[in-house]
Length: 165
Length: 70
Image (cartoon, rainbow over all chains, first blue to last red; front, side, top):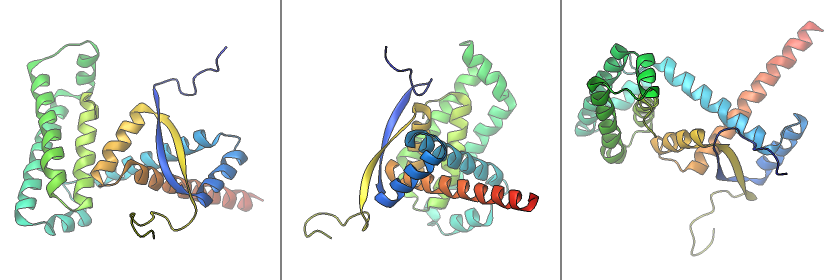
C-alpha cells in the first residue's frame, strides 16, 4: 500500500538554488525538531509569508501612505507616477465596491454559484486591473516599493473575489 | 567566473533544493516574486532566510524567558 499523501491539498515542488552551508544548517535544524527538511522549509516559508502579509496589512497604503511608499512615488517619472496614481484610484474604487458588497456575501455568492450584475462587474474590473498591472505597470514602473504595495493590494482583492492568481 | 557563461550566482558551494509546497502557496509566491522582479527561486530563498531569522528570534525569546524563570 502506498504511503499517505504528505499534503492533504494539491502540492507542487519549487526548486531553489541555495548555498550548501544553508542546506546543512536546515538539515540540522529540521532533525533537531523531528521534522523532515521539506516540512521544516515549508513551515519557514509559511511563517515568512504570514509576516509579510501582516506587514503589508499594517502599512495600509495609500489612504495614509507610509513615508517610504510616498518617497518611492515621488521618485517616479511624472508619466509613471500618473499611471500608478490612476491605478491606485481604480484599485480603491474596487476595494470600496467589495467593502460595500461585503466579502462574506461575495464568498457565499461564489460558493452557491450565484452571480449578481454587481459582482460580475467587480470581477471584470479586478481582472482588468490585473491585466493593466501585468502588461503596463510591472513593465514600466521600476520601483520595487511601489510594485510591492500595489501588487499586494491587487493580490488581496483577487483572493477575496476568488480570482486565480 | 567562467569565461563564456554568466557569473555564478553564489561564490560558495551551492546545491539545488526541491521544496514541496501546497499549490496555492506556490501560486501566491509566484505573484509576490513577480511583483518584486525576482525569480521564484530567489524569492523562496529570501523567505527561507527570513523564516530562519524569525525562528531564531523566537527561540532566543523563549530561551530568555526560561532563563528568567530559572
